[in-house]
Image 1 (cartoon, helix red, strand yellow):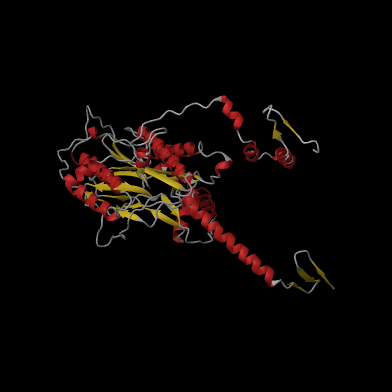
Image 2: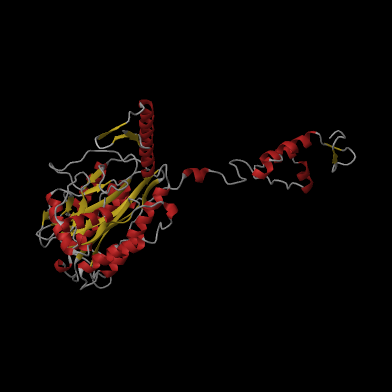
Amino acid sequence: VSTQSTWGYQIFTGISWQMEPIDKKKSKKKDKEEEEEEEGSEEEEEEEESFEKNPAILDKYRSAAIITSDALKFVIGLCIPGADIWEVCQKGDKKIEEEVGKVYTSKKSKVKEKGIAFPTCINVNEICGHFSPLKDESRKLVEGDLVKIDLGCHIDGFIAQIAHTIVIGADKAAKKVTAKKAEVVLAARNCYEAALRLLKEGNLNTQITKMIGQISATYKVSPLEGVLSHRVKKHMIDGDDVIINKTTTDQKVEEHKFEKFEVYVIDIILSTGEGKPKDTEQRTTVYKRALETSYSLKLKHSRSFFHTVNQKYPTMPFSIASFDDGTSARVGVAECINHDLLHIYPILAEKSGEFVAQFKATAVLLPSGTMVLNDYPFDKELYETAIKIEDKEVVDLLNTPLGRKKDQKSKDKPKKGKKEGKTEIPVPKIEAKAEEKKDVTKEAKVETKPQQKLYESFYYTCLLYTSPSPRDATLSRMPSSA
């Protein structure tokens, strides 16, 4: 005996079961519908990533950039002699999370994810990057330290990053920065300014690389090898289109033109040394989820750690110093690395006694020009050096105003009531009596309220049989037959 279920299964009691034959025509229709839905979702995703079609995306980039600028200002205020680097990094990350929690809180915004795009890192003197230490491996800042602050934020996957270099205790009246420190900071800043001005539609990435080398040679410093400025996209902090800091025989990138509506994170790092950073013995704490690999972890601590990573940092870099459970983080990282589940951001450094400077900002290529979203102010009067840029090409470039050009159309467009080559003619006022000559039928057609539709047929019938009396224009009458 057999029975048939509501889902189309034919069940043989106690023996076996099998699926009832499916109508092939219906299945083909479903397959086509599913394919169309998938294609539609892919097109929607592409539109979501391009603020050319969706201007709201640019607002998200701007919001993220404002948060990074505020966080950078906050962290700079914490960098004083005796400050603990671990505490500064933790407070910097907390500041980003607090500020992110204040924006796009409405459900209508449809923002699914927001938070840290790159953990706060405090890189001192010869340390090149990625220093966000654990509490028991931290150190304190000392007066005279050359400090690089690096952090990032994202709104709905749209990323803004920023980095800035300061010298602890520097004062333009009493203690100006001189010698190698001043030279590397000024060189890095000028390279950064030149790169932002060359980042425009139609220019090549190789032009920026060449200019970095030219300015660095003037100050007798070296661009750091292996540093890339990436084009960023939604949930992609390291896009394929890049600008390399320094080209070598082993490190080269493809030449490409910049196009409008692209977003780049310009990252300039220079060194007073050879510009060849090396791994240090310090523990790596910054990682990023490797989305291309998967593995079922064995250890309980590892599974707990990896679950947190997938929830809080599915696509963005993070620091294990921010995890409450330090044991799970350390054990989990080890097993995840063994199975290629994480990308490593190692702590790199120059030779002891050398100094490294960094400047970073997020910029957008718009039709009206390049807009820098988070350019933090820089005080050149704090630094003193005898070296000056004398190359006319470089000087002219650095003197070029930074930012978008005013829309020429708005300039050329004449104001209301004024035309080129014509005098303004005043328009006479219309008398109130002229309002009585309005066409009643046109007004009736404009009205689209639902309650009026019920009376339209009767109303227009009345109009057809209504004629104004020659004796009294204000009265009308219906024919006796009506």
